[in-house]
Length: 536
Image (cartoon, rainbow, N blue to C red; front, side, top):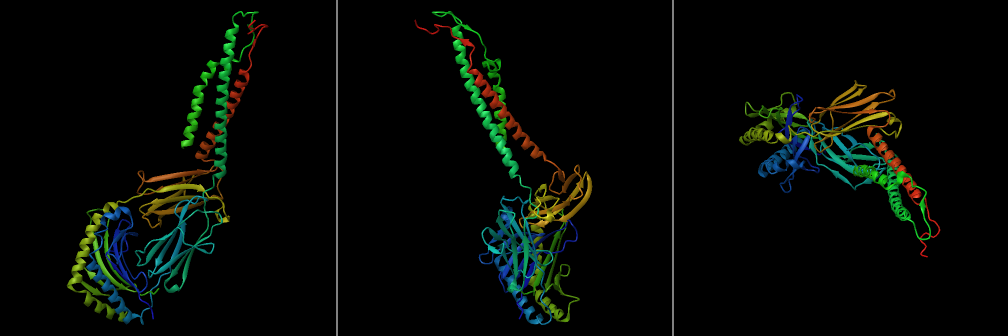
């Protein structure tokens, strides 16, 4: 015997007819398997709130929704009545239609991707996006090379999609390496089948480890040589002062003879010249400091349509309908103030639909529809700033992927992530001419942000070709942001290597000059005559 799943979609689900139409959705579902019931509120495709039946609490998906947590759902009494209606309709529909209607099921889809551009050895997060789930009963398991992984795993609750299916996200914190092989295994109700999403390193950011090590070594040696040079110059200055004192004494006749000064120390190492090196030394030190700081398928859908546009004071459309197994059974007419049965459904369903409408056309249900419509309109305005006007600016990175295998050879990657809303345009330019354009709703990440990865084949690229990834998104002040790539060193690499080279060369020169000054400061042209410093 089939197990039954009933899903009650309360306000407000609708399929958007226009790009600027928004939907506020409340979903109540009940079913034999865990979770046996759930109550959600959605804005478009993103989860806002989840209701906990055990203690009557409401959990916001984002922190800035917390201020509405206590008032977003009806009181517990109304929720209990709605849940009872869901279960009663589930049982009644099961008894009368299970022999006539096959279970409605969906082919679960699984996509696994990283939250940020992939850099080997740097912590990242794998996201398993499970969509087209129906009924909402799945178990998600992570494996690494066939071994189950439990540490660093978290799973969200179910959220409702616009096509009467569900979706869920699972996250795995990890540090990627070249030989990694991860799987996100999604088991359906009763273990009937398993959908697997695989992940291996595909388009990693080229490693700059060797480059950083060499530049760091050059900086360290340069700083060391600068320090040695300063030490030598300091010693040279002290010895120069001692020689000067001896020369002053030798300028007068001494007892027992006379003395003359017949040599000079090079002017470069004179005390005055050494004072002139201080500004240069301070400049080197400043540069160094600056650098270092840098289941079963029977489903009941009770749907309420609450749609509105981008104008805050604009019209809000409210409708309500009840479906079984994805077939409309009854709908509520706001004009007539009553429910009507389906028109073109099979005979067995038509009979049940008439019985259902007779039960729904009660004073309580008609009043409830009015309350839900009023609540919908109120919430649409109250949530406006945090939903319709909500924006998050995208981050982007353009890089030539490290060739980990044949498919990633000569592939230029434009990774754009962390933006909201989902609508975005990504365009590739070659020498300022458009070659590809991608206008799409990007992949959701389950946290009210989205991402998209655009690839460009470089097998036919010439050495002087310049590629630019252009991103257009409503959150950007100038609407457009772009990032270019050209063969050869990037500007950041040029700056890094140039600074390391300058510091290294300056350190070597400074050390050699200091050593030379110190070496020559020990010599003196003064030759004492016989009897010099002779007390007799």
